[in-house]
Length: 139
Image 1 (cartoon, one colour):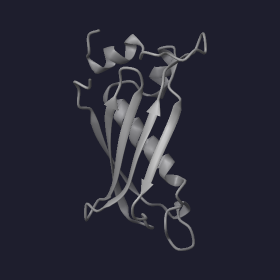
Image 2 (cartoon, one colour):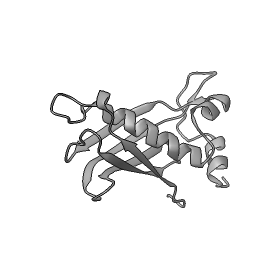
Image 3 (cartoon, rainbow, N blue to C red):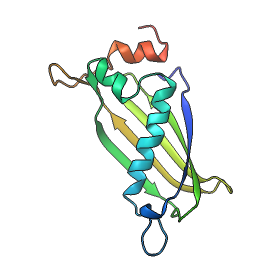
């Protein structure tokens, strides 16, 4: 059902405060990296978190799946490729984390978000028209 191909690439240099004593990124910090990358992706369609709120919708994460392949380490520059995979009933975003220099795969992930009407606090079973407008899709 995806007639579009929206992707973004984000680079992050692993900071000191994200590592453990072995100079490996603590697994929980990947969620922060995915949030940064997803923000870059949504900026591409001009529908970031503030624009979502202003349109009357929140888009909470309802599912997040992560597969750790190889750890990222201190001062390594990682690249996160994000791709919007689904949008009709929910936003599903895929993430691929690689080492910028070698291209080696480090982590894969997928997040799912649903629209919630801020006035009624009800979940939408179909994405709201504003999302289709931002994607340039006529419904």
